[in-house]
Amino acid sequence: MQKILVFTDIHFVEHGQHIGHLDPEERFLSGLRYALAEVPDAERIVICGDLVHHGRPAQYERLRSALADCPLPVHLMIGNHDRRAAFRTTFPDAPVTPEGHVQQVIDTGEYRLILLDTLDEDAEIEHAGKLCDARLGWLRQALEGARARRVIVFTHHPPMDVGFDTMDRIGLANKAELLALLGEYPQVCQIISGHLHRTVSGGAGGIPTALFKSSCHQSPILRPGMGVHSSIDEPGAFGLLYLTQAGVIVHSEDFDIPGRQTLSYE
Image 1: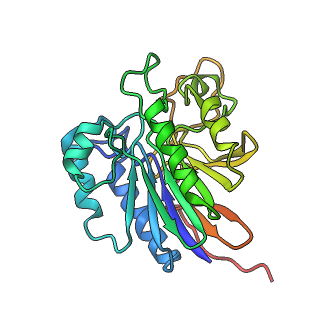
Image 2: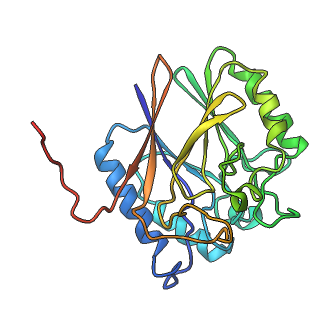
């Protein structure tokens, strides 16, 4: 059984700055230490976008320093708070497509992981995402190349509505087009996304889909009149994927829970 750690929406800022009263780097590193201790046999880490909060070079530099001693391979994706030029300057070895999109394929055992770039820097609705024709064409080639492997697709913007009108408006603009493409390939068995800062599961085009919480700040239930930036200080979390011969098992694990202890109810 292979194990993949998934973080998302880590939102690094410059040294000395915070989001509300929270230090995103401190929260992420606490979660990373916990994940590595609890899942010592994990093979890799995927971070599903919104790596930084404002897309500024200094924020990416801080992230690069934070990851310098990580013992596992780390695969970085970008989200609506990121900026490609600043990201690529700081992480010049990150895989990109010929058109410059931050996308990659990872083959591991019987699985293929496909990491997509849903950032739309010219979005009509701020923070919404999109997959242009070039990215969808690249995705088709990646799906064709999977052959008999099961496929897990990673996106920042989830390809389904989640029931919060304010968040659904800044979702993936052409999710129907993505799902139509994925539906042509029965080996696609799971979609993993971020963006919402909330644990959500469901189906997108008949494909099991899981969204994970942020390592930093979380979203409450968004009632009418509440904005997309409404946040609460709940414990951070990460995702844990078990890649088995029978399929993908998805866990979400909170960390930094005050007074946490292991109990026995025998």
